[in-house]
Length: 177
Image: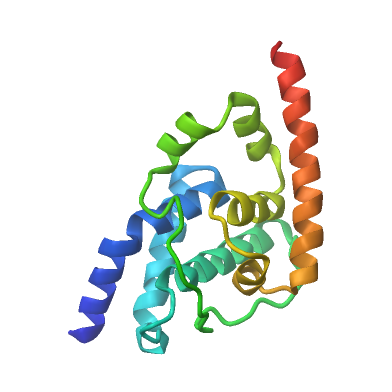
C-alpha cells in the first residue's frame, strides 16, 4: 500500500516533467510515453531506495537517461560505456524551468525554427547534453551524475554539442532567408 501511494504521488507530482524530459530525449511522443512508463515501473520496484531530502526529479531523470541509453544501445550498439545503477541516489536541489511547462509551449515560445530544427538534428548524446545544461539548467556536476561520466567529459561533450548546434543553426538560418 505504501509502495502504491509513493508511486501515485510521484506520478502526480513528476509525471509531466518526466514525460517532457523523455520527449526531448527521444523526439517523439510514442517513445517518450514508453520511456516514462518504464521509468515509473523502475521507481515502483526501487521505491524504498529513494531517500527523502534528495531530488526525486534528478533520480527519475537518471532512470530515464539510462533507459534511453539502453534503448539506443539495443538499436545501434552506440554506447559502450558502463551505465551506473539507476537506484543510485543523488543530492540535487532546486526546481527546473521545464518541470511544469509542457515542452511544446516552451519550444513555440522560446525556440526559433532554426534552433528547433538544429536541436532535433543533434545526436541523442549531444541533444541530451544541451538539454540538461542549457534548457534544464543543471550544473556540470549534476549532469555528470545524471549521465554517469566525469565533469571533464561533460564539459568536452557539451562544448562539442554546442559547437555542432551553432553550425546547424547557422546553416538553417541561412537556408531560410
